Image 1 (tube, rainbow, N blue to C red):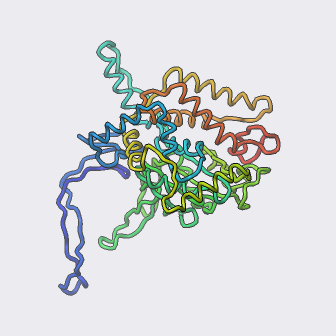
Image 2: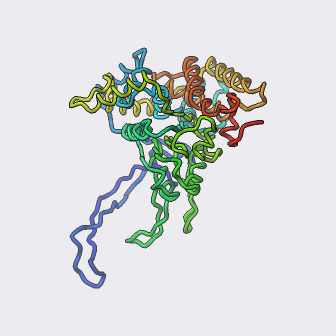
Image 3: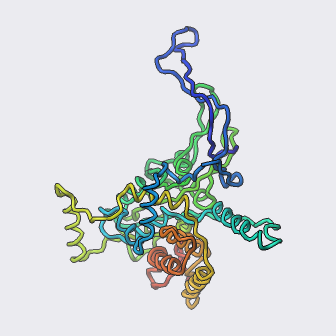
Length: 439
C-alpha cells in the first residue's frame, strides 16, 4: 500500500478513555475513537503508485452513492435524447444568464476525458476478445503511456460577470469538489502539510485541497491574488497529476488527479483589450499554458443585451424567482455526471483521429505565413480530452467526427481568442507560452 491508494478496511470500531492528567485516574467525558483494523484490501491503486486494482463490487472514485435501478434507467433514457448536449448546457447554473460557451467548456471539465486506466482496461478487453481468433494475441506487452484526462479551465474577465457564482455552482454538483480562494490559500493548504499527532507524537501528513479533490474538481477563486510560492505548486499537479512531499523525513508522492477551475480578475480591475492576456492578469506563462481552455468574459456595453440581462436579474428577486425552466434538476445532473464518469469510457475512432490531425495541421498552418505559433502539441492533447468528454455526455463508446468539430470550435472560442495579439490580430500561442508575441 502506498500513499494515495484507496483501501477497504475491516475491523472493530473501539473507544478508549482519555485521562485528564497522566498522574490521576480521572478520565474525560469524550472518549478517543479508533479503528482496530483486522484486514484491508486495495480498492483502487493510484496511477502514480502502480496498476489499478478493483475489489469485488468495488466502484470508481467518482461513482458517488449507490443508484437505484429506476434512477439508472432515467439516466439512460436521458442520454438517448438527440439534444442532450443543449439540455445539459441549460441545466448547468440556470440562474446565470447565457454564457453558453463557457458552460459547455465547464461541462467538458466535469465529465473529463478517458483515463489511462480505462484505456488499459479497454485494450485488455479487446485483446481477450481477439485471442480466440488470433493465436498471437496478447503475446506482447502493451506500452502504457500515462496521460492526464482532466480538463483545466481558467475564467478571466471583468468584475461582476458571474465567475464566482459559476465556481460555487460547480463545487456543489461535482462528484468530489473543493472550493478555495486564492487570497486565503497557501502552498501547504493546497498540497499537504506535516504536523505532529497530539496523541502519538508522531509526524503525520495532513492532505490539502488538491489531494482531497482527487478524482473531482478543485475550484480556485481569486486566482490572480495567489502568491508566487503558492502558484508554483500547481505546475506539478496540473500536468503530472501528483503532489510530491519531502518534509520531516516523509518522502512520498500523493495523487492529485483533479480538474482545476480557476477565476481571475485583470490586474487593472478592467480587462484592457490593447494588452495580452498575460499582461492583463499577471500570471506566469508556464502556468497559463497548462490550462486547456482560457475563457475571456468581458463586460461590453450593449443596449439590447443590457436590457435582457437586467430583466433576468430583476426576475430572480421576485417572490417566485423567474429561473429558466430545465428538464434536468441539480440532483439528476449530479447523478448523470457520476454515472458517466464511472461507466462510459469513449475511445477515439479512425475518422475522429484523422479529423484531429487535420484540425491540428490547420491550426498550425494559420500562423505559418507570419512565422508565429498558432497551436502547440498541448492544444492537440486538449482537443482529444474535450472530444472524449463530449462523447461521454452522449454515453457514446467512441469519439465521433462531430465531437472533434465541437472541440475545435470551443478551442477557437476560448484559448485562441486569448492568444490573439492585440497589435496584429493574429493568433500567436507565444502570447500564452512565453508572455511575448513573436516579432
